[in-house]
Image (cartoon, rainbow, N blue to C red; front, side, top):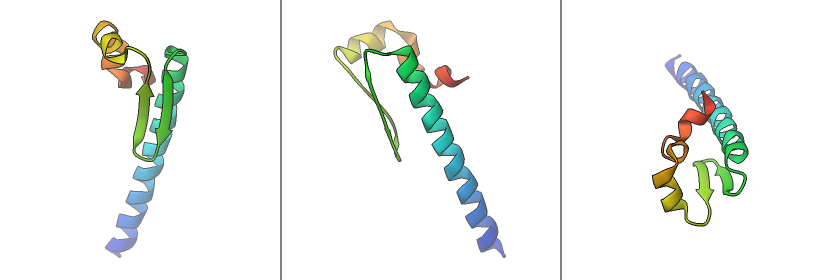
Length: 69
């Protein structure tokens, strides 16, 4: 009985994570059109020229989850 409940909870969590990952990637692509934004099952990847400097100067890159509020 608990196995079914656990499997259902895991499915719900995985769908939620996928939805959030897609929303974050879409918001990041819109906010940073000059950066390369990729997504996979592990998360969202952001790459681009001088990214470390941009992260220091742009709080949106430091608090990336704020884009999906």
